[in-house]
Image 1 (cartoon, rainbow, N blue to C red):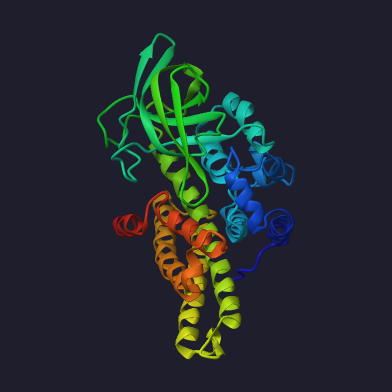
Image 2: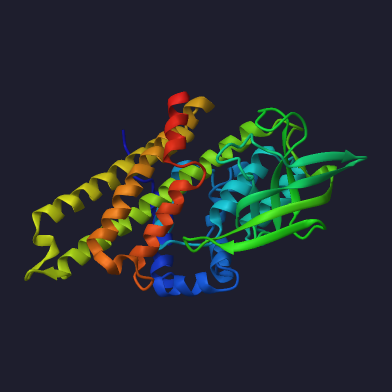
Amino acid sequence: MDFSFSEEQQMLQESVQKFVQRHYSFEARRAIVASEAGYSPQHWDLFAELGWLMVPFREEDGGFGARATDLMVLMEAFGHAMVVEPFIPTAVLGGGLIAALGSAAQKDAMLGKIMEGSVQIAAGLYEEGSRFNLTNVQTRVQSRGEDYVLDGSKILVLNGSNADQLLVSARTAGEPCDAEGISLFLIDANSAGVHRYGYPTVDGHRAAQIRLDGVKVPASALLGPVGGCLPALEQAVDRAALCLSAEAVGAMDALLQKTVEYSKTRKQFGAPLSAFQALQHRMANMFIECQLARSIVLMAAMKLDSDIGAAEKAKAVSAAKSRVGRAIRLVGQEAVQLHGGIGITDELDVGHLFKRITAIETLFGNTDFHTRRFASL
């Protein structure tokens, strides 16, 4: 089987690498993270201009094909530079849900704007105490004539402070943790009753806690069937988890490269660290973990692009997220330890890479969660 990238994927990879080299140095990233928005609007416009925001969407929706293998190429390159622009919340998760559940009118109104970079999305899918359980939804919906009224709160809403539109899961029937009765609503982020509390996360990204107090939306805000959105939610979150796993592969590869380079210049007892066999073995283990992680992410991406059943696709994603989580722990900790004290300073990118992959390990299900999920499927 040929695992080499296609010509289009090579061009995509090269375009991201050139962007990173020209515009995304470590110091430039630190300035972006410290800005009020927490991302660069100019870079976001460039993402749209280069066509990257079209990658997660099918050709019939105006995109490049929605292939998971293409997303893997893009996200791995993003991982090398710790790109903070809200690609996953807007294009992968938010846009993916609209593409999967939206009516023709809803897709016409939103997808083009997402791909041209004029609209950003945030998906509020988790609540206090829900952990990684998408069915643990206590946000309630009341029907009032032709409108709906939403009350509840969402936590860890990625890009929630900057988004123009919010995708919110809410319960139209049943009790918390019931699989049936979960609906999805598209809400203007500036609607009356929407309260957003934004904050920076440990890895330099932005998130928000969102409270909905009697938020009134028209019937046209409902995406998909009433009470039947869970399968689409699970598939969208799985795709986002795969993208994060690919990003982690890129970040771990950067950590390995920087650790090897440092070991060749840092001297101890009159010799470079790279001369000590015990440290060579540790860096060899880092390399092996990086390669195993890349292989299993590629396997999961190829399965998502295949015609196998939904359960097998979910199993492949959980296998990848679980295995990548184990690699994150070893590669991240070894990189910091081999750098010594400087590895956790704010002035060195190694510490920032470590924070990012540590956050990735938790997002959309941590290692333990996906290991249990894999075993149950």
